[in-house]
Amino acid sequence: MRRAFVTTAVAVALVGLAGCDTGEPAKPGGFRLRGTVLSRDEGRGLASALVVVELGDIYVKNPDPTKFAPAYVIGTMTDANGNFDVDVPDDVDQVGIHSFSDGYRYGALKFKLRDGNAIVTTRRHFLVPDGVDPATVKEAEFEPTASDFLVGSGAIAPAPAITVAPGAMLDFSVVVKAGSGPLAEQHDVMSDEVLVVQPVLSWTGAMTPPPEGCATTGCVQGKGYPDGKWTRSIAAPTVPGTYTYYSVTTSEKCVTSRRLTVTVTVQ
Image 1 (cartoon, rainbow, N blue to C red):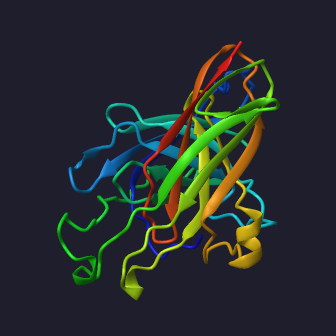
Image 2 (cartoon, one colour; image 1 turned 60 degrees about the vertical axis):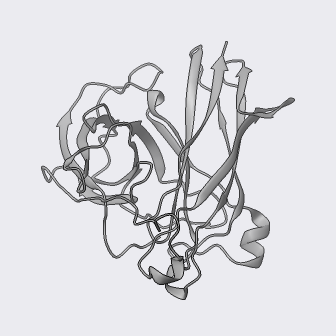
């Protein structure tokens, strides 16, 4: 995905820290990345926005576009004032910051970790009002849809909520479809940013596109990815508890889907 503009306001600062709060024992070193996701429309921070951090750069080249993009590794959620606070490794010079908030455009910011503060802006999706012919609104945006976000584990069938042992393998899946209108200018395709986020663990992971879609329509980073069922397998947390995982997506035109959730109880 190579966007010509950025659309979410993210005010960012970086300070040193002693360890990482990941749900596992802290490791020495690293930095704490702090920032705010802002709305241009309301002039305020956006609460409960999901923030994903890509290590090394923004839109890091995926060595195999038919597989999940490995650079997306850190995820968090903003507080009531739109602020976020997350740890990053100390061997990383710059990051890509991505924000997702229901009803708002996707935002992205390339940020060098020792450059001080940085700000970009966001706005609400420009949706077609009810009762209006989409063909009369050339600049209209159409939200992609995400559905059937499920998680399974071995013999446990995929479901919206499951219970597993610590460290068990989790198999996530979600069905996505790009939004498009009747005009050529309104045509859209999915990007490779079909993601799973677990804020408590500061974790995120990109998902793998449907193989049949890659074979027929192609999977080209920055050009478009297919609709269909995306998947990702990871190990469950080792610390007992109940964890909410979020599904977020964006299209190549920076239009986001509504988030979905599944719940994993580790015991």
